[in-house]
Image (cartoon, rainbow, N blue to C red; front, side, top):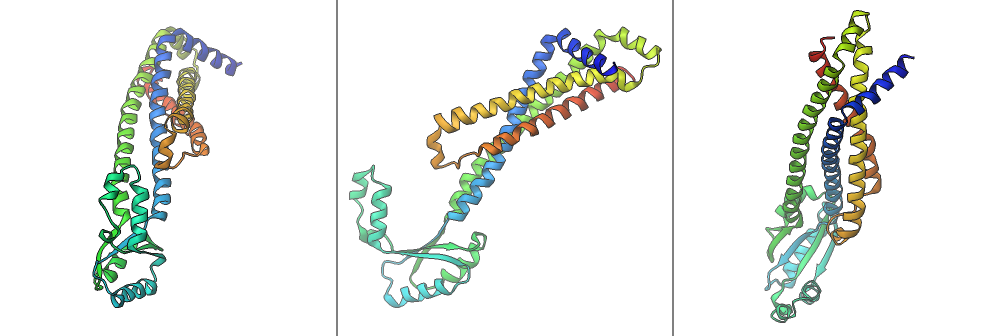
Length: 291
């Protein structure tokens, strides 16, 4: 009987302040969408780091006048280094063929370059890319080595941009979450004020605190859950419509977002939405109803 009464009061409360309820749901949905997008961004950047860092190479470019003895010494130093996982040697001619493929859309630029103007090089993959400095220290002092380039330094610039996007998403989500907290608290205050006489009577007849607070807290939780579901739908549609279709060309740069990660957002957003709404409603009632 009590459960039925509480549930009925929740539905009445949501309908009585329908405009405030809709505003609260929309604000929660937008906040949770931004929060979910930020979490997905963090997970995706970690996946991309694992993928790209596993593919990066250290390029060792040789001088144009390198002789056979110097080349043999460099080759032996690379082979004997325990940090080396794979090694590929590229001649001037092979470098020029790769150059033509990379710049096939700019024939005039390709025609201005010849094989003799490109350096020989070694492409090396390390067992642990984090130990690039140790590897470079042993190789760069050898005669015949012109320059050593770690592709990870180039990727770090790209990931700094992604990290900035992560921070911006979190800031926007935090601002929206603060607005949602204020709106939830205000909605609960309005609901409590509209039922102040009923609450006073319940206090006089000795109703327990949880019995008085439960309808208000559940009202906020229901709104938070609806907002979480709407936020999840927005994330899923955004993933399918934008990343899987409109922006599919970006998958050559960005690794695809697994559907499993997106589905993981549903329980996460529901938990966060329900918890934040319940705590905000409970704290508001503690100050407003003095129960």
